[in-house]
Image (tube, rainbow, N blue to C red; front, side, top):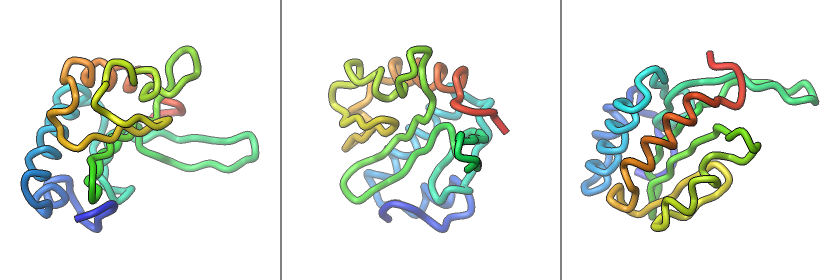
Length: 138
């Protein structure tokens, strides 16, 4: 499985993956659920989503998006964290130096294996994200 999925549930998404990716995604899913249980799971965005928020741009464009997302791609695992810190930087970027085995984009953390992520750092990042959504949680 690569990229997005038509799975209806988190379990169906994870179960459709081949090993070792299935175990890696399940491990990260369980860490997210244990760390930020207040973020409601969603499959609305064709990947594992946790928490939704409403955004509105100055242009008038608005919509809903996930606060945290997890996806299995062909060559890597993507963890999307769309929250920003008090300095206005995306949290994924702010944590880049603490996740040295990851490739970091503005709001995306890419790794080959779940073992490439420090669990304590990831838990702090997730907790901070849940406390600082970029819009109104819905």
